[in-house]
Length: 146
Image 1 (cartoon, one colour):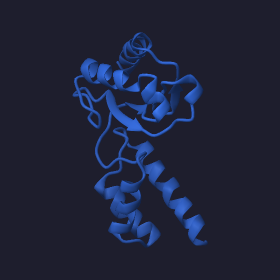
Image 2: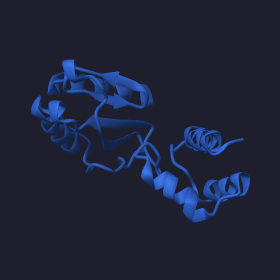
Image 3: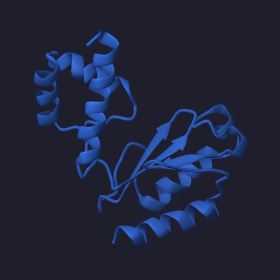
């Protein structure tokens, strides 16, 4: 296996570990197992996990809300969406609600500039957002989480 294939396998493995954990993060134990599986040092694996924003080393909610921070989304109001979510959910960006349902994160461009502002909830993309649309979505997700 060449270096590029090994890197791809490492990323796929880390995604599988994170996606299979109920709190959607990579545990210390998983980091240690990964070092053994790929013959890497802990620092090398940690470097990969900390470099990519899609990986987390701390527990996250059932729904990870990633608000686009591209210049276009910012100009179209993504900051007001962030402020609304922080107030509605009672957590800051990078934090998880006490009930473990929501985590708010920022992300770079989601490639939806023509329909800004946009965000992702887990793997689903939402576009042309307003505070009203966001409030409706949050209430729906709260109901589904129960």
